[in-house]
Image (cartoon, rainbow, N blue to C red; front, side, top):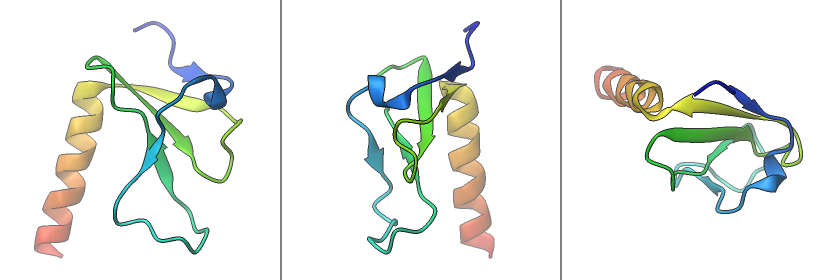
Amino acid sequence: MSKRTLPDASALSGWRKSSYSGNEGGSCLEVVDTDPATIPVRDSKNPQGPALLLPSHAWGAFIDSLKASHDHG
């Protein structure tokens, strides 16, 4: 993966928020998880802004870390 950002995240469809996100308009991340190699991530408050393009293994490690800290927190 040579490119690490997408300047206009609205160019992609299929964005979703975590089921843990509420509707209060707080800070939420959205992801598109249809590509097995790359996970685009954006700020839900800025849908036309940039998206980070993360390798799927890095996204998986991030999620595993969050789950581990939640289980032990």
